[in-house]
Length: 444
Image 1 (cartoon, rainbow, N blue to C red):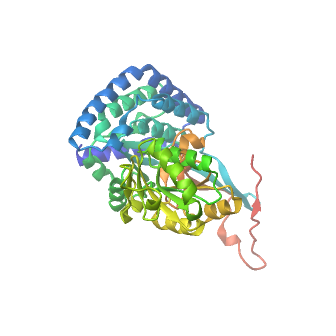
Image 2: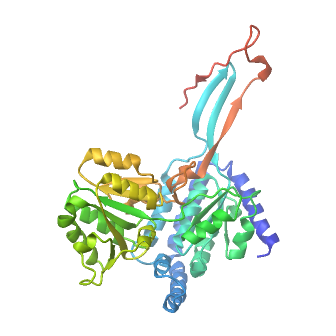
Image 3: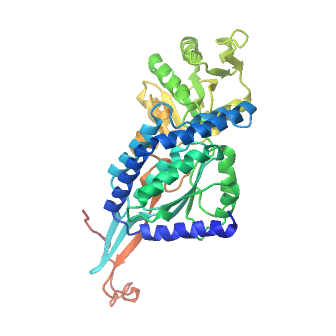
């Protein structure tokens, strides 16, 4: 698109966002129900588009120009992915409307009342790689929260994205939702132009590789919500239950290795290495996970005797493998584990396996991450699993939204003040001046 055309996309999104400010919860629900129905009706066409994208992408993988992890994220047919996507729309529909909620109220004076009320952010620009279901997830979240959204997916999923976008547009035809509330752009040049349009766009949400997120963060004045890495670790404490440790570590690594919430580093307490490391390693190797082991671990797991074991290099503990690889390090105690995670982690999701409640409490309080888990897989870091219906992304920011970002992360607030001709000049110190009451107002 030309710069003028892209500016028009952003302008239309802003106009749509302004109209969405007064769309009712019922009108939103009608639109979301229509989207669910249309997705199921047009499933065959969507799958056909997805197959074509996968055929093209597979050739790119074979030529070495597309990573395996991106290819895996492209598939919309496998397992229950499509059903989960549709179910996510239904779940979002059933959630309470996050807008127009009173979060603070105060009586400043007789007849002068202040309310803090949630409202949409406005216009979202969401950029993502490969995963086509993101179009549906984010469109549903944006509509429910009253935001307009401009979407840019990876070129490898172009046909699937177009099919999904067309279905969503058709679902909005018979509703009060403006059609320009959801728009799709296709090229990197479009994104470059949009990143300059801070007069129209309120928030950028990049979902993808480290390089993509870093590029976005460095090339716009618009606030950016997201994370650059998903470098998650699991610490197996000396008081861990071995069976739980194996279950948690294996699931965190192999359930979906290409996901940002998959475990990339395994830390094990030195006192249990002789009895715990080998069983955990065997369980991982049974799923073809390659272990990058530190020097101390090599005394238990010899790289010379197993092709799935290799000596770790320092960079391994700063690497998001996104594949069947995991770095392994022996630590002296929970203190060293916490220090390692806070130094090398990406503030995404970290886990401890232990039966010691005091150790778990210390770990979960002191580890600096959006999610800290005890005796549970890092793969639970997901908006759908949290009950958000879906997520717009995972944020490691320390702003208004952190962790999996659902509806609450897509609203902000405004202050509404109701008076009766009140003026500031009447308040202050002295006999003739009024004093502020600052009394809490009970709201339903």
